[in-house]
Every structure is written in C-alpha cells, then in structure tokens.
Image (tube, rainbow, N blue to C red; front, top):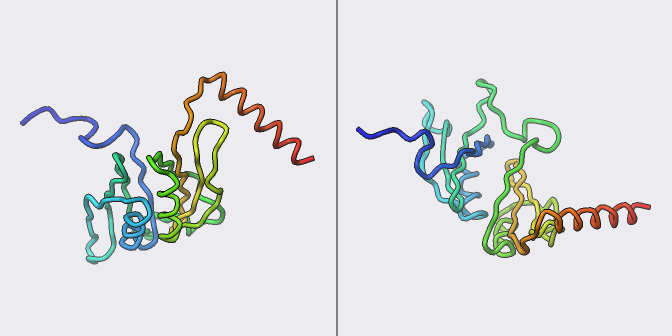
Length: 162
C-alpha cells in the first residue's frame, strides 16, 4: 500500500462544512443554484438523516449534514441574526450564475455589481440560511491600485452619508 496523503486528492487545505435543515433538499438546491455535483451521502441509523454528504462546486468540495440538535449540530436558521461565516464562489460567468441561483430560490442580500477591488460580486442567502458571495474577477489590481480605489470608495460613502 502506498503513502497516505495528508490532504486527500481533490481537496484543498480548507474545506467548508455546513449544517442545513433538510440536507437532501439543500443538495438539490445547490445543484440547481450552483451547478453542484453530489459526490457522496452517508445516512444515519434512521435511513433519512444525512450524517455527512459531500458535494463539489467547480473544483471545490463542500461537506454538509442535516441538523442534529441532540448532538448540538444546528443550522444558521436555529440562531438569531445572520450566520457568522460566509461562502465565496469565484465563477467564470457570475451574471449567469447569479440569475441561476436567484431563480433556484436564493434571496438577494447585496446586489451583484462591480466592486472597487476588481470583482463583480453580489451576496445571496440560500433557503437554509447560509450567505454566499458570488464573484468574478474583472480587473487585476496592484495593492497600490486597490488601496487607492478603496480610499476613494470609502470617501464617497462618507460624503453620501452626510
């Protein structure tokens, strides 16, 4: 038997793992909204609860499971306020991906628009309470260009608030 890799093939150093209410329906949503492919699904003893599933969005794996309150595993919907973590997707055609995600049932939280740091980006909430930022790099910028653009953006925001 060969050497075991510390990071399994097809994975990255960091892999998001999310908890959702009704993971089976969530997997179908992620397929429609983000073009996800289901890789695996492990059911609990009841034959219904998804203890662990893996989907792949583009080149990235995302792990997910059903809520299991008896094991202190809860989705964002179980808490007040927005979730403390967000998922960021870089996509080839963010406008088409945005439309697909909204049409699948995502709720716009920040309109898709050109951002000062060189991305076209918007944020939506999925039906399970997770926030997803969809982005496409449209302009490569040096750190100095980004710093200048950021200062101009925040100065404009301060002027608009007055």
